[in-house]
Each structure stands twice: as structure tokens, then as C-alpha cells.
Image (cartoon, rainbow, N blue to C red; front, side):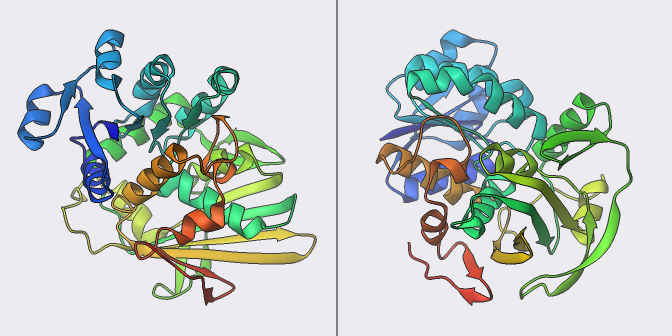
Length: 338
């Protein structure tokens, strides 16, 4: 099957193309720069298209089974590529970590995608998608919860230029204010973040984290789960790397390790699920490609503009990511397969 990767020349896009090839798909590489596409992907179908050119986007998606959008900032690219996917009648998946872009995708395309029986899946990435799958797994048979917290333990963070640009776009869209999900809704505020100690599963252990370092999970998780408070925190080492403009971009082989630790609480009870692995950009590729594989083989639960936790059997999805991802529940490893 042909899968269009829009933004194929970017850091994450290259991982997605490689994962598609490994899984037996035929990537069709698309993006704004025809020269870079040709230079990087000799031998693959190449379809240049700018987001301001609907006809070119239509040509890019012709004959494809799905499209994965890896081109940020998604505030600019998501809408045009979703529109092209709806015209072509193919599923849309993106890897957006931008809070506002994900809100827009989920709200603006909710009715149209559902009425068309289409799938529009934003944030199918390390930030947003993975946390959503972990929280959904932790919820299990609970129908509601008081609180969910996703703690990100990163040994370091070498942001890509795209990450920095997308972060600036989000910052500007909310006028420099901070955002949180509390009392059942997204709220913008000016309260300063605080630090606290968090004990991650190994290999990270006890770390200082910045509480209120808000990521896309505050959009994906409450989009389908009844949880009044959804918060995220980030290891201070990673936050400092991101804040430092001198931190270099990631190389092809990263030694970065991560642990994503999820705690869900309801009526005095607590459930905990965590996932560990290497390289937050590399792990996005198996997340996105596994999503495509499941959509195209009918292993989905609904249609519309939805997130990973609503669309898939979350626990089964996470198990399928082994050995790229190690998932533990109550400190006991769950079986993994490939």
C-alpha cells in the first residue's frame, strides 16, 4: 500500500519513511521542497506540494491508502492536509505536539469526519498519542477518574528546528500565556510553574520535574475520557535543554532515553502505567505506522476526528510496539511483541 508522508524530509518524517519501508508499505514522499525530496529519496515516488496549493496536495494523495503529516508547524499544515485527505477519502494521521493545533483539528473536523465515516487522527506521536494510550490503558474498566498525571522523564532533549518553530507558534497563539486542563476544561493562565520530586521507574529513578510543563496530553486525554484534572510535568534536564537556544539538534543516532510515567486516581484508588524507550522522535515512527496499519486493517473502534485512546484498543496497541517500547503496569512488565 502507498502511504503519503507529508514533510518526509524532516527529522521525524525520515524515521516514518524508514518505518513504513520496514513494515512493507510503499512511502510516497511529499513536501514543500522538491529538491530536498529528490536529493533524499531517490527511488521512491516523489510528489512535491505546498499547503497553499490544493491541486498539488490532491495529486500528492492520488492513489494513496493514507497520509501521515509530519510537517510542522501544524497550525499551518494540518488544515490543508486534512482537507486534501477528506477529498481523497483517505485516513489522515499527524504527529502534532502543538496544543492549539490539536484542539483545532479535533473540533473543526469532528462533524465532517464523522458524517463522512472518515478517520482524522492528530497527535499520533510521543507527545499526545503515547500519553493518551497509557492513560486509557490505566483507566481500564473505570468510566471516570478524578485526576491523571503524565510525567515525562527524559535524559536530555535535543529539539529539532521544527520543534522550536512549532513551540514558538503555539506560544504566540496563546499570547505567551500558559495552559492547563483543570475542572474539566482547558484554561489559560499566568501562574508560574513549580518543581517537585518524582520517582520514575528505572532507568531514571528519582528526578526533579517541572509541574505544569504542559504537553498535548491535556487535549488528547480529555477528548474522550471523563477526567476532571489532566496534568503533565517534565524532567528539568529536558526542560533546560529545550529552553537553551544553544542546544544542538538531534543527530541520526540519539542516546536519549525516556520514561513516561502515568498515574490515574479515582475515589482514593490509584493506577500506574509507564513506558520506557529511546529517542522521542524515533519512537514516533512506530506509533504513527502502527496506527496506519490498524486503520487500514479495520482494527478501530470509531470514526471521526479522534485520538489514539478512543480509536484503538490501547493496551493491545502498546503491546504491539515492543521491542521499541517497554510498558510496565504496577511495576510488572507487560508482554511485548513485534
